[in-house]
Image 1 (cartoon, rainbow, N blue to C red):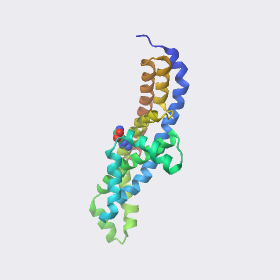
Image 2: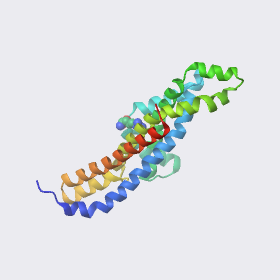
Image 3: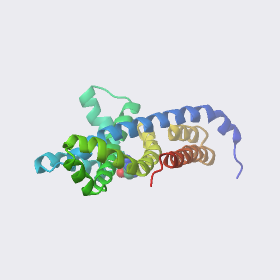
Image 4: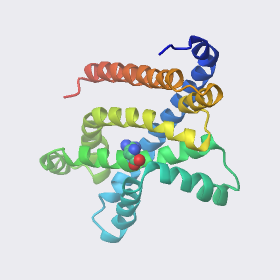
Length: 218
Ligand code: ARG
């Protein structure tokens, strides 16, 4: 097997562009996922059944159906209907954000519920109201405990953004498929694609390890 380096060289700039888009889409996904996920976690923790119900089903749906199916549903049906039109990048960002929010909601809920009940009771007895207990006692600790699973979530999103190639979002895998199609070669394009993702996920892993050490997450 001889590798054609000229293909790698020709497509390298496109792969770099694709990498930029992959990073952008997953950063947006994880940030929006965190913001939405926070409120969904609070909703799901409500003590009122009827308030809890829509949040429970939001999470059930997004975790219980394949991400690729969600992407097609949003790209071809939901977003064109709601917004009038959509682009591949918009659809990927929206789908990743919503999908991630369901997983992040469970991460936050687990984090909040892992804090010993006695802490909230103690804070209440000091005269704090529900909001203050949440803001000053529960959230800072829960957030710290959520950092490792949130890091995993980021890595998952980075890789799953490759599904965007299925609706022609010009991320890394899109360019791999383009190169494979142009030259009818499979080794060079897909090795390149794999290496690009590996570089991204390994960098992120190191970054997260560093962050965990800095914040002294236990
Ligand atoms: N790839 C799986 C799916 O198609 C899992 C998606 C995981 N998403 C996440 N945000 N952790 O459903």
